Length: 129
Image 1 (cartoon, rainbow, N blue to C red):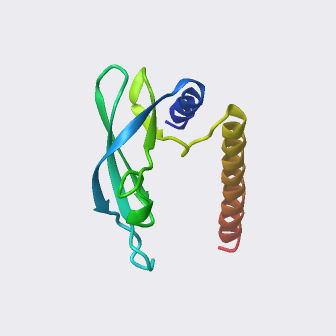
Image 2: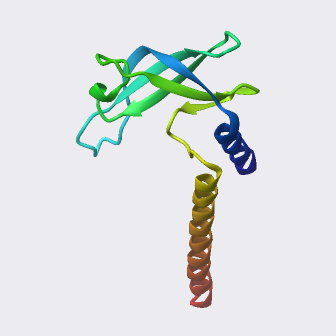
Image 3: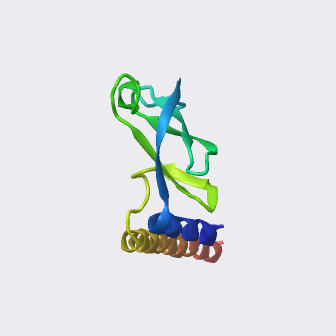
């Protein structure tokens, strides 16, 4: 699954189609109750180049930040024409293969460190009985 999402991410960087989205609904986002502020979710619809319609949503800290809600901002959606289910709000992913590879390497490094530390704790616990 991780390999497929990595391929999809690289495909999005390489040849995603960008289309404008229209705000169709605003809702309250679910946030951790320990947070002071509320939250808002903008739900959008967009039309792909082949005429099909897609939906996407994004959460924001407040209703005022939602593009298209009492402002003239436009939200853009990137999607893969060959796999329309692979989509994201423009600007939320990597913008170049180098940036993607850097963050992928960084995440793998963090995962390796986590395994080493967890393994050390496990070995220590087994030795100490």
